Image 1 (cartoon, rainbow, N blue to C red):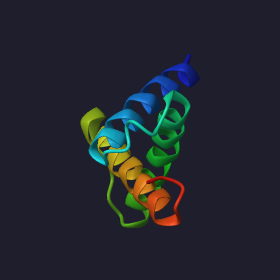
Image 2: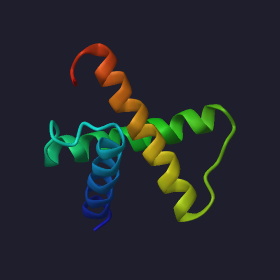
Image 3: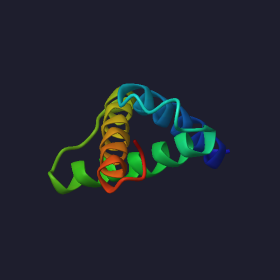
Image 4: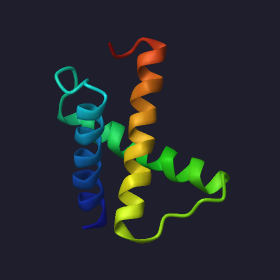
Length: 82
């Protein structure tokens, strides 16, 4: 059950991040889930390295969203997204 919830939440985070970065028309469902899950991991990893911790569901969502937005920016910089 946890994997299914992670995929759903990752899809939502990836979708919101793609709307913020205006790449929503280029990304499909699988790309949104991938960006959401990987971006969430990167956001929490970076916050942990900086000594910042997320408290509660909202804090965790914001860190995940920031990680997904950063991942989209990186993918744009590499040329994988326009």
